[in-house]
Amino acid sequence: MLILASLYVVLYTGLCSAYVKQKGCNVYEGKWVYDESYPLFNSRKCPFIRKEFDCIKYGRSDDQYLKYRWQPNDCDLPRFDGVEFMRILKGKKVIFTGDSISLNQWQSLTCLLYTASYGSNVTHEANESMSTDCGVSIAYFTSHYLVDIETEQFGRVLKLDSLKNGELWKQADVLIFNTWLWWYRRGIKQPWDYIEDDGVIMEDMDRMVAFTKALMTWAKWVDSDVNTYQTKIFFRGVSPAHYRGAEWNEPGVRNCSKETRPLTGSTYPTGVPLAAKVVKETLSSNISSSNSVHLLT
Image (tube, rainbow, N blue to C red; front, side, top):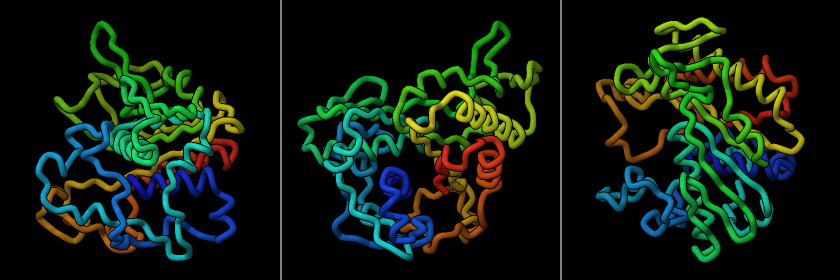
């Protein structure tokens, strides 16, 4: 459900910001409400869902979790209209960049558009990319850290001050980024062997410091390389971890696999994650224009 909420924010806060300003609405303050008219698409009929995310197809018996929508306190979000979305973005390219959160958002949006067009005007291309007959292109680019990982003779190096993929990204009309959940991975789940920072190569460093440095590299790239008058940029805020039940008032629970209902209210029980604060501070201090990047909090 957080995926759809983020999409609504992208659509109606960014592309249709006049509506939100007119209503004086903070779309981040609200609650999840049950709505029998949901979901907006059937995952079993959408070709863009990876099997590991297709819960219904692979045996989940309940479907109530699909019937929630985000309700801001001070206004109503317009119901998603895939046809209108494609009209607004006719001839435009959208790229989601990041980890599985960005992938989930890409899957949700492509399924929404596939459903809106009855699948007749949508082309599924390789490497998580789709296009419509009206020229709307929606792509996903895997980049767990945003900055580069390069293979040297001595191993894989996470380069905190290198962002070569930016040449591809900045060609898009709308960019949605995210990163965080991979920064504390270790052992076989860690896709790099060394870290390089300002020409110095080391085996490891404080991960929050590394995360901050990488964000600074990304923010400086936005400031220097991207024409933000032509390209709309969103940064998907940090999601809380889902491995410690104490964070949602269930001590002893190690993951959210048996949770069936969303948390109530707009705030997480344990407060804003430190990484989310780092994101906000880094963006505000390293990007010259406050309108260059819209932070999805």
